[in-house]
View 1: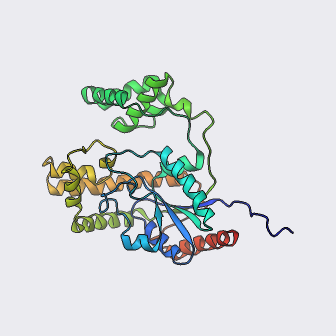
View 2 (view 1 turned 180 degrees about the vertical axis):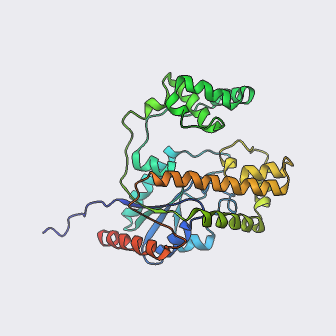
Length: 317
């Protein structure tokens, strides 16, 4: 036997779950036992100065468990699934070259899908065209633009809500740039994909809802509204930007601009967080996870399973 033979590359472990499911705590506990480096799979954590409302790991937690792809963008910037897939692929290679174990951790399922399945060759965004479509949406209403999308791309339109401004805008943009419906691109061969071994953290919904309400109240006590006020006072952001559409932030903008009262703000923010969790549940149920756990009642089982997988990977390093 040749002892210098490089072992076959094992699938990358991903720990995926809805917001508030305890992913960060689990990752930190695992980092106390294994030489892992965590790659954040979270579209909100990429933004600098947005710490409280995104439930970003603290400096102390990051010192215990190194995380990548946190605090990499100014809130003025956009960060796409394609950028994530490119950055995560590079980081996985770099971490493995250090004889460490990369672990994906987060809840932005579109990012995980982009890495796992690759991306179709969709055209890049056109700022001028996007602005023109947005203006049409404001003038005609997004329900009308959704009806227009039905005529040119029924496959995409049928999976979008009539008020899903961001995705309707993108689908119309793709059609106007290429003359082809966006759904047609998903039938084309995608760019490079990666094998992931995914663990799903899926809490019982009622318990998670209670936990999310409690967490939001804690955020308020920690100064969340002051955080958003600082973002508003920059004078170069607006609530339609990707960063400010994060749950909690857009509702805080409305409250701080006196469009709604405090009780309405709190109610809407918690409801939006629960809606995000619901979408993440839906993704996860179709994800074909290696194994799923309720982290609120099966934490030790989840830890033990992932611990065993990391042991196998550590031996292969």
